[in-house]
Length: 214
Image (cartoon, rainbow, N blue to C red; front, side, top):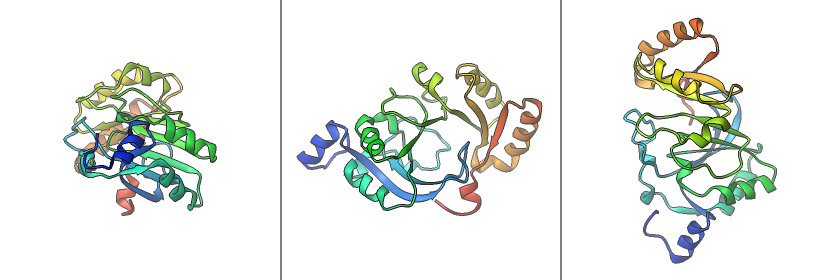
């Protein structure tokens, strides 16, 4: 649990009514199935997966991210011209997200979760983007619920690993391969060739980095 908080905030946290928030921002989804869609992003601090190529390592330590009541998050989101909220991290499922989802749903929001699936699922989601990591594999219960499987490819052997998870998700789950950013010039041509040979997969790119937006 995040430290250095008031007793009141700790009580809210224990009920799921406050979360350690690293940042919130309004931007365009840059990767996966919903690429190009405007949304409110809520980045929750705290992650114990430890991906060596994580591009938000500053989110890992939940203790440095202050607890924020979910009602304040709602107030911020209501000021925006969209009703789409992407919850990302860190690893959001380290926390109880049922109260967050209930609150936002009452106000007409569509909710999208980005997760490695390594912790028990909570909350009710319109879309789950599952991005499994070898350091902390997803729990079996989330696999049939994923709307998309997004596998980060850093080495050629990751294609076999991707196929192992494609066999575990539902037949309706969309399959994406995405190059690890620092190796994209080498990996992207391999992904393109793989997709041409295995066309049930699709290409995901981190377009937000190419156009320099959050």
